[in-house]
Amino acid sequence: MRRSLTSSDEEIEQTKRALKRLRPSDSPRNWSTRVHALSLWSDPSAPALGGECAKTLAIVFDTAKAADLYPGAPIYRVTRFGIMLDRADPKVEGFGDSHPDYTLSLLARLGVESDRRVLIRGKPYSVAQMVRGSVAEFSFENDLEWTAIAYALYLPPTRSWTNKYGEVCDFDRLCEFLCTLPPFGRSCYGTHVVQALAVLYGVDAQQGMLGERTRGLLEEKIRGVVERLQGVQRPNGSWDIDWCGPGDWGKGEASTSPDIVVTGHLLEFLAMVAEHVPVDESMVRHARRFLAERLLAETDANITTHYGTLAHCGVALKSWCPEAWDHVLAEEKGRVVEPGRSNK
Image 1: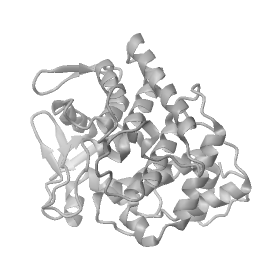
Image 2 (image 1 turned 180 degrees about the vertical axis):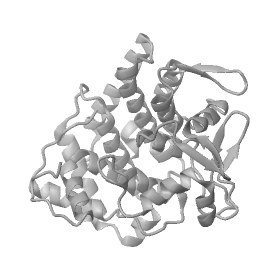
Image 3 (image 1 turned 90 degrees about the vertical axis):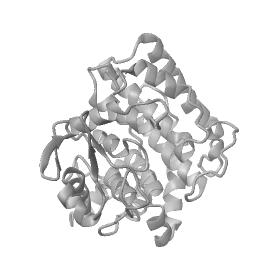
């Protein structure tokens, strides 16, 4: 699913400098900051950078280590069905998933195996039991954007699942639900919905977990979004909250500017889209420049405050300019790569 985009030396240098603005601070307490940093800086082609990514994974997989940073947090709930990472709780500062299955979906995208051990108060469990815990609580009343990603990457070749109430669901029904879900009121202006659809489409191409009709509906939806993005891109390369059409967003996101939220997530989505779906390179290049320029202009304080949102911008830049990411990796390791060359 990896796409390529030829980049000039100037574009590589600009993107590299923008990515370096997102180097995580030491020992961030906020869980959202930690896991978003992990999504950007834990690269499968290189060891975890610094120590923070490794520390975050250690906290996920061992409650004894998590308790040192989040005293009083239960970390995991253990049920007869499986285990579940605790949701955000105002009583425990900084800890908890803001959305159901967010951390689980990230582990899936990082390629963490389902048999990876999870120690809960010294007793061994596994990531597979996290999946089972999620399945038990599955409901269409939940935010399913992250659940869909986790299930697509962990459940196949199984195509259906049963929650603790005996209700059966499958990937066709889940996919159809997401395809018809109104984006208004969804997190990050509805952009996580199309990201989930892109993952489902990519996994289906390998696993064949969808029926023919659903597969056609999904491809039509993804192609429609890509075509629409080309038509509504703003002159400066960004997309705003009207990317999916006019609608009532209410108070919007309690975050940084909507244009950088939307553009970062949508450029990340475009990198996830299967290669046979045409994506206009000039559209991507324009959006990439907008993100790089905005990141370079952000204050350190704003990057710290809105790190979760801005990390999505970093993932998008990393995906569409791998040469710049190679340079960042090389500098982190104390080596310098010649301009225009990759260290792979």
